Length: 105
Image (cartoon, rainbow, N blue to C red; front, top):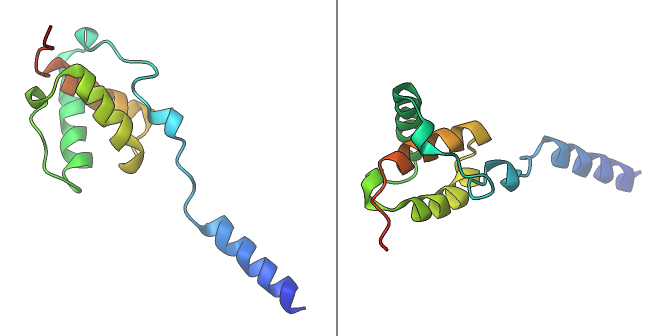
């Protein structure tokens, strides 16, 4: 009987615990959005999301601090940690990429 109660409690704890993050759903590098197609409204939404979702854990870096490739890497790494949706990750990336440092040749 104790084993049955223990199994039920473990099942309950597992079911109510945090759900694993689907990393693939927020990975930017899998399908990089074209920031050149972004409207002013798109950029503003991305800017606001960046400020709201990212400043809670670390200082905000100016978009021009990094080039697009670095922002892709940063977004791939941070999106699951910040629990961003695919849409939010893409909106933030578009804002950062449009204002990113030019890539060195």
